[in-house]
Image: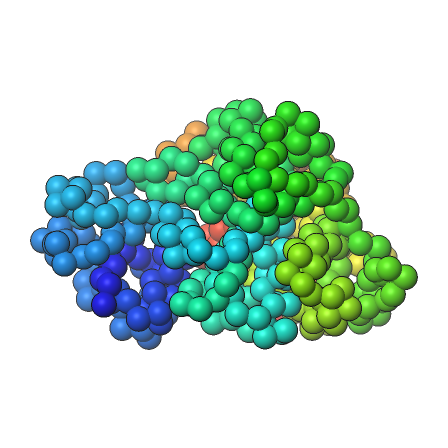
Length: 450
């Protein structure tokens, strides 16, 4: 039995991979200096929650076959240093995923936005049609207990391709490990400014990703994205490449109707960006031998990935919760809700949380992103800024960057949610957007109490 030890096992991807390996028959151990919910309960259920928190180099020994290193660990982590001293095999989780699936057909969904939803769509269809597959996706989705699945017998693997760093000692983007047979590129917009200090450096990592596609591989890319267009023109692609665009759709009382080849299908999705994602997923599924009719029929009960325009309060004035954080994501999400409720008052609440969104030079990219909302609240937590060792933000400066005529910048989450609750009780549609946690408030639990 192979023994694998996770340094920083509590991370979202790391603890899911740990559970997947335990279910595959590996002996799994791990460590971390802090583990929050839901990782903690899920690891405890699998009997792989560390008995005590902290780093214990004396537990690192030659009986360990592989060390999987998470981003939460530092390069001088005591367990990592001990593993290096012993000459153990140390890998990042994307490198390990590639090793596990190197003999399988790999589908990788990359892009600055839409990759979680597009990956979730493909997984949903494959599961509905009883395909066997390995997978990794960046969010919990309906019908899947885990965000990672690894098997001995599946012939295909579907990965969400993240451009962030592989590990503290491997500065390559995660998706450079996956070497796709089929790849999707949904769009490129500068993000992760703490890792990619210039737009050029950010685009370059996508260029490298495209160059990892083999001569027999295929790339599907969104045809209306300006940055992808320029990248395709200047990159030598060994495989074949195909463009896709958004599918035609119309809003209906209980969802949407999507049209493909003059046939109409029901959908629970809405928003132009989701029907771009849907077409990308369709193209991959066709490559896997799935007929379009099978695809659309399978997708009729797809509700979306967690925190991707997630409906957390139903009714005439619903509440939505979304992971949107980059400017294009914020703009597209607000526009989608406006299109769905053209005659309702919409209140958008957006948390600045990422390194990029809290950077004074980057903030100007958010100009007009909230314009489709009648009222906007922009929230940030000064303690998060201190924790990230970043320059303090002036609320007046933040207000100027967004250029919304009816917006308020708030730094206290209690005040924020009191204002939002008041707007909801007065009949407004509420849209909450954050990649953080609004200073410790769970919007789903908050909405349940209204």
